[in-house]
Image (cartoon, rainbow, N blue to C red; front, side, top):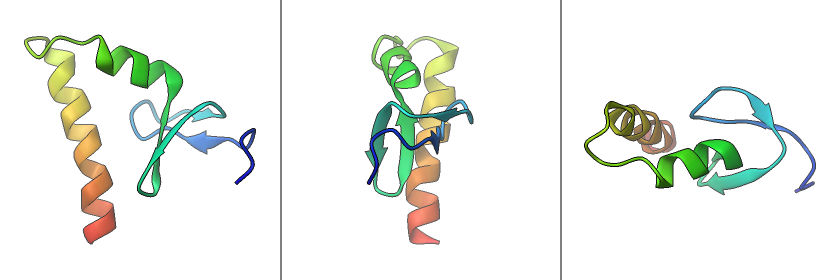
Length: 61
């Protein structure tokens, strides 16, 4: 896969070229960095969990 090709981030929904692929989905570097620095007590944490669940839902649909 071309590392400079843009993929749409499953978290923010924006096309980005840098990030990670998990199964068939993409998470941009910015969202990944925000996720790893978000405390489990923060409301944003639950948003990230909800978006990440979409990876497994689409794969197992």
